[in-house]
Length: 174
Image (cartoon, rainbow, N blue to C red; front, side, top):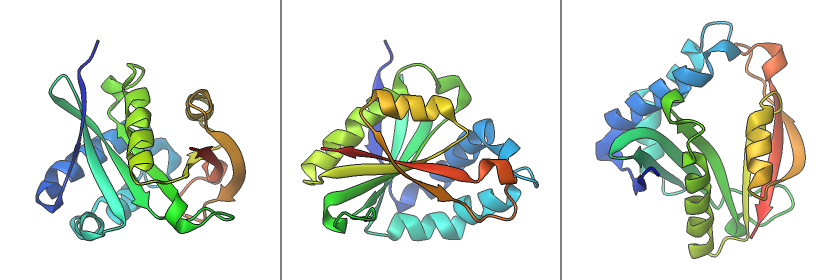
């Protein structure tokens, strides 16, 4: 059994966050892009972007450790409304990114348990997320943990291959 720890990260952790973000993203998502993911990684993981997000009071970042090894990160958006729900009741689970060697080991389930406890402590009534509609494993994982299909969304990233732009929005009512 792995010893899983989920610890908050702050602005002083910028470069550690950037490294794990790029590594985890690179392990799973480069095939989605015409340019191999360069545009998206610069957009999301540049120094300026991550620094701004780490300073944002409505974003919460956490490092994910398995047996003392940094294996990924979690990003939550606080008070981010889902259509039909009040922002104060909502928590968006924007990212659970794990390096490939950390997948299928129960870490994601631990991260979801942490996220649920975090939302409950904030008195949120809903956790929601977007998953790629082509990622049946992710959809099945979230469904197994109580999330239900809510709606769909289409990404408008020109650099992304058309067949990967569809998203399913899922929600978990607490």
